[in-house]
Image (tube, rainbow, N blue to C red; front, top):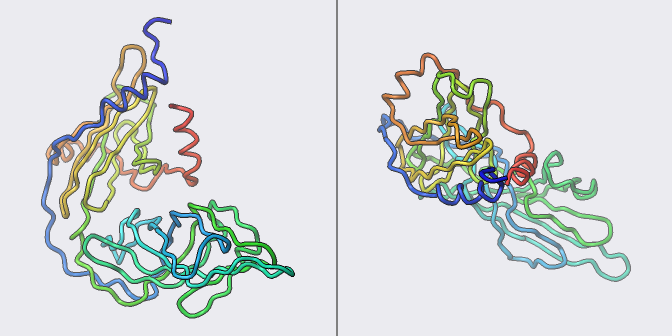
Length: 300
């Protein structure tokens, strides 16, 4: 039907909104250094598939931090920070039922200009990897974890979740390499009863409904945030260390259907309505990232 809003038009609209916006900023007060204690546990995601058949001792692989890591109220390691692991030992399965062997270790994660040493690596049995029970049963040795299967090769898929630990006490300047982004939606009645997710890539950050807001802390750099509700919108923010940015997200009527409208705002506008807004930071986030990806695929 002429004038209908199709999925193809949604994709085009999303691409056309991929542009940088000047965003209001506000300096944060200086804070004392933060000490990240040794043995602090961090959840990591393996960004490459690994196998006792194809990998070799000494290979390196990429990993990322899954959740924000705090020391007290200070963000020490933002989710999404990138690091590296190492294949400490690899041997393929052999004749006579010789099982494959694979020993992995996390080595470090980068936070801005700081490199935080890591050690150990234990697969997370409750993660999305859906590993065999034999693979989940790990044997810890100093500084590394080994994953053994009684027969056949060990295969660790890309996206596997694991747990590592901080190798030694590390002193970090808080907020030196991170910024803050505040997403908010006004109390006006437009779009009453509807809410939509705000995401970066396939990671859900929060949901905006009438009279709500949420806050995130992110690594310095360029970030693309998007939302979809019967139509898409996207905003790009170049985050500077120690800065705060404000994004106003409303629901705007289109030609036929409503759609999100993410626009840069400022502290004064946010503060003028903050008393009438509900803080939903950390709420309404999907527990399984796959759910978010499946829903996104259906929308597009």
